[in-house]
Length: 207
Image 1 (cartoon, helix red, strand yellow):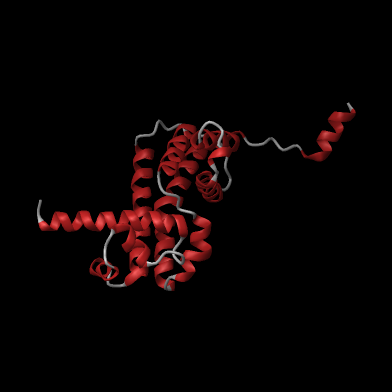
Image 2: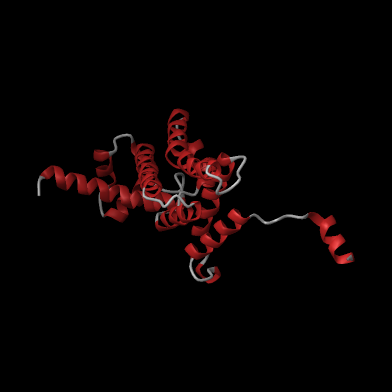
């Protein structure tokens, strides 16, 4: 094994540990000392890979995560059956097999803590790699007549948020599995809730 290979493995392990800690606690609540302690490294040695410190490391971790999601979603769409339900089930399975993105915390806490230009770059990457890909799936299903969706962008963002939210359900509240619960939620979205309003319910009760 060459020195370059060892260095790459060490960097990947560093990114893996940092991703887990940032995913669990967020940018502000993780220190480089936390990461160094998990890796059994000296605090100063982290600067060998990331001389820009915690922000540079967080950007690298988040960029790697978003791009990994993008590649996986592209592959799922490419080999999908064309059936929107099957595709959404596969996408949900992928998201729940990965560390949570926690998009709300990312938007409200992590991104504001970064330099504005870096926050914009990561936000644009997230949109292009994840939200826009899912939006394309929904739009294609709409154009193919599988579903009727007047706002694919809104629905794609909502679906990502809802699927991601299953990460935070405590185990005692899980029915079957988090994936099965996410699939049930997707079916509800695809069917719609058939809202009829209070007036319709009152008329049914009178009849």
